[in-house]
Length: 164
Image 1 (cartoon, helix red, strand yellow):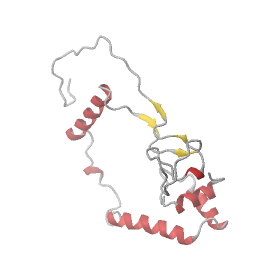
Image 2 (cartoon, rainbow, N blue to C red; image 1 turned 60 degrees about the vertical axis):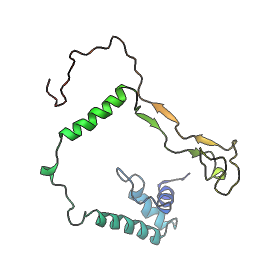
Image 3 (tube, one colour; image 1 turned 90 degrees about the vertical axis):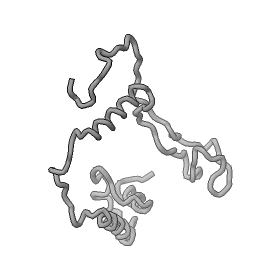
Image 4 (spheres, helix red, strand yellow; image 1 turned 120 degrees about the vertical axis):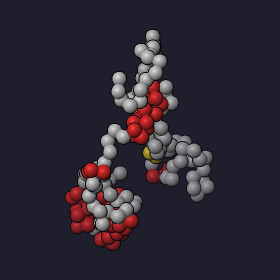
């Protein structure tokens, strides 16, 4: 756990997370303060910046940094099909949009590395259940609850082009 934004920035960059999105919450002033306090080396910052610049170059963002807005197609038939499939998945219960953790958050660093689906840690020592996870894999809430009643369609065919 970081005590402040400077420590959080240092830990984050040292862990290999090079970009803070959607905006700078910690990196804005945290990186500079972490450098000043000696929590972070310039070598680590340079490595992170290099990885970001290499990826931008690979994606061609230096040659074409701006999106051609005329080339953007909103509401294209293929986009509508994807949206219709997603909606059908929610409607039939195949997909459940949720705020569930994709990782486990261990109770203590002693439990690291913590895997919800392994009986042994990477060193071969057993996982200690008393240390466990504060928030296990899949912890969270579901945003959907629904029930069907008197379900009927007004038509036997429904157009997919958005026209009624």
